[in-house]
Amino acid sequence: MAPQLSLTVLVDNNTIIDHYFSGEPGLSFLITIQGKKILFDTGYSDLFLKNAKDMGEDLLDLDMVVLSHGHNDHTGGLPDLVRYMTRARMDRIPVRRPTLIAHPGCFYPRPKLPVPNIGSIITEEELQRHVSVELSTSPRWLTDDLVFLGQIERKFDFEYTAAGKRKVLMPDGRIDDDELLDDTALAYRSKKGLVIITGCSHSGICNIVEHAKGVCGEDRIIGIIGGLHLLAPDRPRLEETVSYLQNQHLASLHACHCTSLSAKIALAGANPLQEVGVGMTLSWE
Image (cartoon, rainbow, N blue to C red; front, side, top):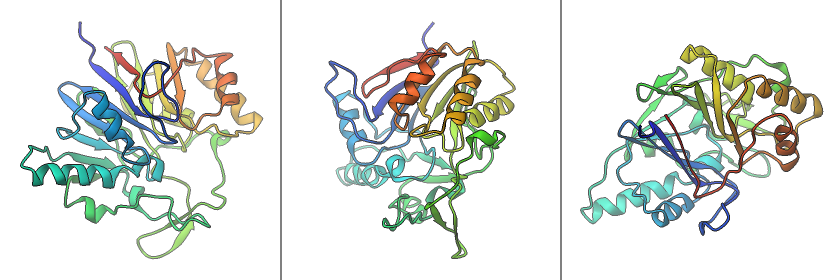
């Protein structure tokens, strides 16, 4: 039987040996499922377009663009996608108008001194000229078996990190601490259990898994791929995360992007950690 979901890594910090693509500190996946073509995040630049072209993938026929959160290493390629689509339209090349799905807070400006904005450099209003924008805090089923998880419920205290210098400019003009409430993920309901597809996991990978279980009514987790935001976790958080994931009895754990080497080593001691890099394709039934 053909795989129901296929995922190709267009952008990651790393590349796969003997695959001559380029990497950057960002993330972008191309997902195909049930005849739908979905771009999950766009990385930091136009690199996702260049790598996709080298892989023989056309991104003018996207059905959806899904954003994990608003940081520029996941939304930075949006202006390049718009430019790519606009040029094709000017040249009378067929372009599908995709639906962009994200949390409502995804496009709020994010000052983090000395940087005036580490969020998206293209606004929701401008994007609406080029794509159909649907913002939701609630889960939204993209296909029969793939769901955008919406705002993640945060249950585990050990996954909380203080905002620190992170700020967010609210629509009413207030500047608040940025708790990254827009951070979300996808869950795929396969025959053997859930596959979690995450961008950065600012909301906590354990919180994301628990939220996905509730949304999907499924306790089995067979795989996780994406950034786990374990760059410099304190020992209690790392140990609790390793233990929680071990108890899920994963078939595969593809930790990438914002997961440090030391965190990967710790995870690998108790979980089936596997390599990730640009050019890699995974599939699940």
